[in-house]
Amino acid sequence: MSSPAIELPRVVFEAGSLSRLPVELAAYGFNRIFVVTTRGRARNLATIEKLLGQSLAGSFVDAVEHVPKSVTDMAERELRRTAPDVIVAVGGGSPIGLGKALAVRSGLPLVAVPTTYSGSEMTSIYGETDESGKKTGRDTRALPRMVLYDPLLTLGLPAETSATSGMNALAHSVEAMYAPDATVTTSAWAEQSIRLLSQSLPQIVADISNVDLRATALSGAHFAGKALGATSMGLHHRICHVLGGSFGLPHAKTHSVMLQHVVSFNASHAVEAMNRIANALGSKHAEEGITGLGRALPIPRTLAQLGFSESGITKAAAEIVKGNYPNPRPVTIPDVVQILERALSGE
Ligand code: NAD
View 1 (cartoon, rainbow, N blue to C red):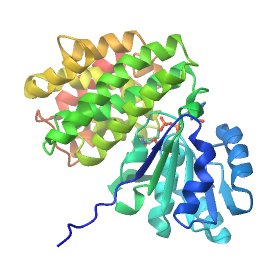
View 2 (cartoon, rainbow, N blue to C red):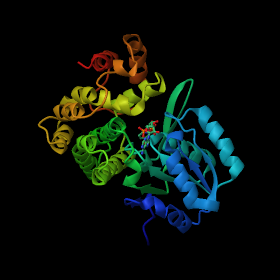
View 3 (tube, protein in one colour):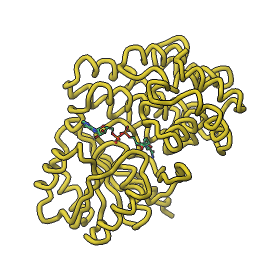
View 4 (spheres, helix red, strand yellow):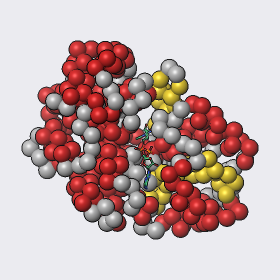
C-alpha cells in the first residue's frame, strides 16, 4: 500500500527564476492567472505582465499590511470578475497574506513569489483584520501550491526593511525552537534559519546588492517559514499579533523590537532551546545574541518609535493574555505589562 501523498509547496529557488514563472504555471495547467501585489512592486508586475501575456486574467495591486477585510472584499470582487484558475501573490507578507485570504475564500490554488523575508509563503497560516481585531487560522487552502524564490527580486529591498523582515523570520524560528510541538525536524529548520539570517542580515546592510547574501537570507526565511508552519507560536507572536491587529503597529518592526524582551522573559523556562538559539547566533546566551544582532541592524529599538504609548499598555496586556497559545513560561497580566514597559523604553 502506498503512503498518503503529503502536499508541500513545490519550491523553485534560483536567481533569475522569475523568467520561469510561465513554464512553471503551465506545468500545473494554469492559464488564467490573477496576480496580487502592492503598488510598490509595480516594476515586478510589469515584468510579470510581459512574461504572462494572454495568460494574465487580472491583477489587484492594493494589498496592505494585516489583510484588512475591506481590502480582501475588494480584491475578491475583481477575482470573481476575471474568473482565473490560479492566484499568484508577488511581494512581501502583505500581498501573500491577501493571496491566502483569497485562496481560502475562492478555493483557488495559490502560488507565491516572495520579495521579503517574512516566511509567510511556507505556511498555511492566514488572517484578516476588521474592527474587532486580527483573526488568524490555519487552512491548507492558504498553503501555496508552489513558491518561486528569485533572490534578484530582493535586491531593491532597503536595508531597514531587509533587517526588520529578517528579524520577523528569526522570531518564527526562535518560537519554533521552544514550541511544545517542536520536533527534531522543525528544530533543525529553525536552527538553520537562525544561522543563515544572523550571518547574512548584517552583511546585507553593508553590501545591499550582493545576490549571494540575498539568497542566504531568503533561504533563512524559507526555513523559518517551514518551522513556523509546523509548530505553535508563543507569547512573542501573540504580542505582535495584538499590537499589529488592534493598535496598528507595523508587523516586522514590532517583531524586531519585541524579540529580545520575550526571549529574556522565557529564557529560564526553555533552557535547552535557548542554548540552541544562542549557538546558532554564535553567542553565549540567546538574549545577548539577539540584542547584539539588533545592534548591528538598522531596526527600531523601542515601541515608542513605532507610535505605541504608555496609555495602550493595560488594554494590550489584557488582550495578550486572553489568547489561547502555548508558552514555555506561564504568562500573567503584570508580566506582559512589564515586558511592554521595557519594550516601550528599550530598557
Ligand atoms: P510587506 O509585504 O508589507 O512589505 C514591506 C514593505 O516592503 C512594503 O512597503 C513593500 O512594498 C516593500 N517591499 C516588498 N518587497 C520589496 C522589494 N523586493 N524591494 C523593495 N521594497 C519591497 O511586509 P512583510 O514584512 O513582508 O510582511 C508583513 C505581513 O506579513 C504582515 O501582515 C504579517 O501579518 C504577514 N506575515 C504572515 C505570516 C504567515 O505565516 N501568515 C508570516 C509572517 C508575516
